[in-house]
Image (cartoon, helix red, strand yellow):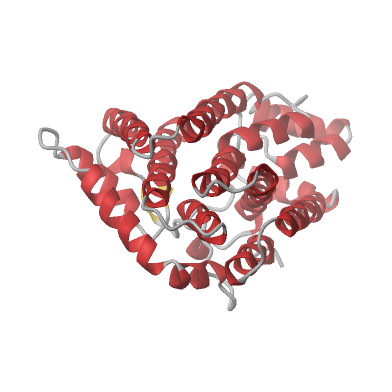
Length: 333
């Protein structure tokens, strides 16, 4: 998803404020993605890492550590860990989803093959675990390793729920908390932990990351139907074509009648899609105000994220995190 489509860009302010740390993260990523015996690993990794991603997740780790006054070196290792986990999941996701684009460029599995994407993703997961042990903190290792398991669990749950028209908003939220919010919350949480922040502050960072991740994913799901491909780097309607039940579709299905349900059974449950079906799906989303209702949910989660920051030390970086929560949903205006 793109975060560079609005005049106000809090992620860029974060990049500036954390520029030295981010440079160290970048250097560590380049060092650890190298492979003496398998040159395809850095080729595939570089294609995705250097494709213009904003590194929001590692910035959350760096910002949380700095907000809590951390002056050691290991927030950099943890930020690189978070980016490796995220990159590994993207490589695997593009294989599972048969995606054609990622960050506005051809997906790695199209340029190489599915086997390369899966195996390089596995390599990056392994590298992430090596990195997270560098800090020598069992508590931090537990949080990040748990997050990795929850992410995988969320992806598998999505597979089983994706074409099931009985999927509820609660199940959707469980999927999102797994596949997306788990890494946001872990990223901010370990930033506070490495700084030995009080438990209440660490919990606040967790709550901020969790709510930010949910808001982020809902916004992404809305933009799949209402976004600009040139700005999002995704084709409009990909989730519909992939028969993925996201929040807007769940709301529209719940609000529709029998005729609507027959359409959803054919296109989502049975996968028999025809020319014009995406346009009809968009009409049903508009008819039942599913996109607007989803936007209101994203706004509510954004407010929850901002409220959580009341419990952490205040300052410029905290203000930027609050602005980031606003920015995630401002793209929907």
